[in-house]
Length: 87
Image (tube, rainbow, N blue to C red; front, side, top):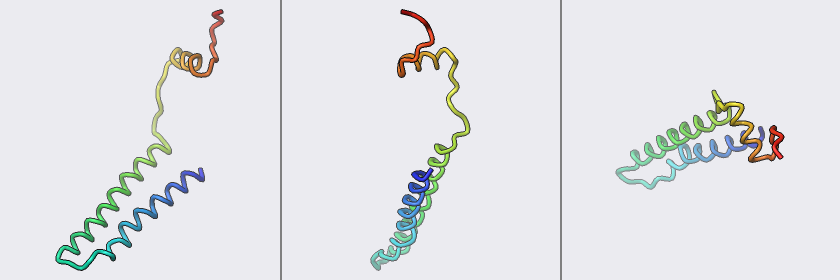
């Protein structure tokens, strides 16, 4: 659980830097306002996309639906825990 919070803090810090700090360092020109707006909108959209994806993977609404035969086959192949007594 600590790793997930660390990930959220790092990614949030990065996009906060891009969206809140970087616009102040845009050189003065006729397009300065547009570039600042692009930086802020890019940071917001990318952060929201990442956050939604991350939260869906942390707590999925549903998992894989496997039949018992498939589960036994996977266990037999991957972990050598065969339920059958075949010699």
